[in-house]
Image (cartoon, rainbow, N blue to C red; front, side):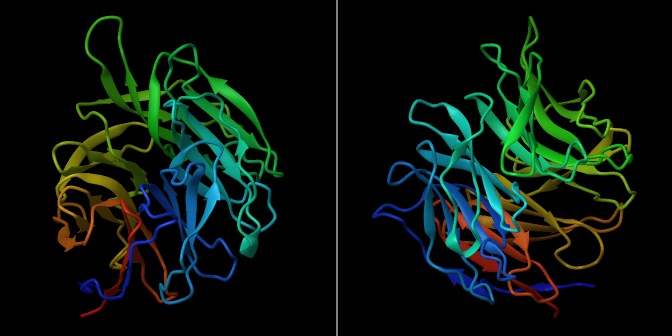
Length: 369
């Protein structure tokens, strides 16, 4: 089934601020924060005023968003987040990466109270060099866990799993090595029914230039990880990473934003934690954020990127192997820094939600021609 794009007319929400200065958005996630059945928008952003770094825009129905309600973090601002129910009270909670004025990068958990918002931040970071996070149930105990990727400097562990107890508290297990991790994702990479961890890895050999890899940490089902499988790649400083089954062969693939070359790379998963050939898809200039979902409802996962330099969104509709993707460029009014896919109006399809650096939210819908 083919689809046509709306012009940017489904919903366009003006710039929001929590002070006379606009938000400096660094990350976005969608989730039903107030429990009304509608997907809401949660932003991680620079602290302005100081100590505020998360804002929630509630979906009032048909993608109509409320004014933001903002919450304090333990440090100046938020740089990224994930949403999960860590204390199993049926209210969604937040785990937020923070950035202090001293450059230290930490981690907060804010427990949700539904319509009443969030509680005070709880510092849970294993160190002060946090680069990336993801959530999942890594030891199959039914509780939500957090995996943390960090820089391996000054003896810190580059990979830490915070195993959830189901009450909003965690126990930690460290995995040490002479490498650094960022851009984490979680999925079953070898088909054994267990959630594994995928990350951007960079490491400095004793002599020579820094090496980059797609790293896969296979999980034995109890939360114990094998030594990382490294798939060396020439691309450095990726902007984002996501998992998908691009060719519907039952194996998860990895999509990453190729910096400086305005493209998305899809590495084909072999089904054993390793990768084969890759394909490259062109995007707009300065892609910084990536979302995956079946936009046109044809059974194939599609790719959407937010392109900061030319102020556009790229939509790549993927299809059967060997067929080139259909591509659209959607112009925006400001510089998008984050993009997500979700059903914002309870119809049969997904909407694209874009967050601009100033806090402007754009929702783009699709319709059949």
